[in-house]
Amino acid sequence: MMKVFKLFIVTCSMLSLISCANRESLPRTTIVNTDTITLNNGTTVDILTENAINGDVVDDTNNYLNIVSRADTAKVVGLKVLEFATLFLDGTGSGSIDGFSKEDLKGSYINSVPNKTMDYLTPQLYTIIKKFDANNQKDNVITIQPYKFKLIYDGLTDNKYNFIYNTTIRTNGFHFDCSEQNDLTPEERTKPFNEWEINNYQLVQDTASKAINACINRLKSEQNMTNFENALK
Picture (cartoon, helix red, strand yellow):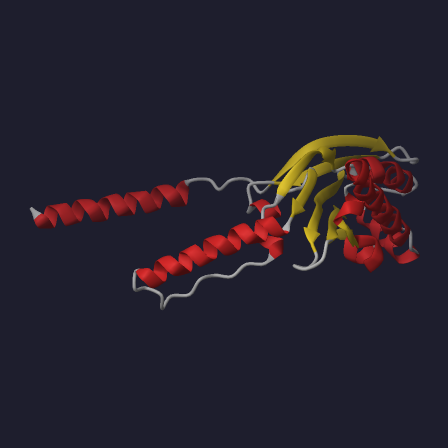
């Protein structure tokens, strides 16, 4: 009887593994908007807006302003202390407890502050693209990924917050990043929280717009424009 029971357990375990292996993984991205524009030479180009989804929360697209505060860290620290205490009291304290960084924290969304990247980006980007001489014999697609739009506290003892921003433009091997690191000065991306939050976080929107403007100016360099246009030929 015991042998039969063990065989049953092994069989169930194998079937479970097979089921998990056959189960389709969740998609990591989704297209949330599609535009089609006509270039000056009559060629059409599809512009896709893509969101990252179903990853760890911090890897998903910030469609609204995400704020990671010291309180978020305090919660995790409390849980880590409790975890350590539990291991210690159970006599299993020899194991290690994983650390974390503030960039890994979920934070909170401010639903009244949408990520307006596409409003800032597309008018300028479309003006650039329309002048390109693209190949009208192939389906040209440009994907825009407005992923990061968040504030993360700078230090544990001050009231400054860092603006974290990232939008990627890509097509046929061409890849161009707009980000706080590339397109904002340290002074522009790090400010006291009370400055960020004035008038429903208007400074966040202004800073995002400034980052896009600086990014477009970088994109307009001769080398970048050549690489971009060649990707559509």
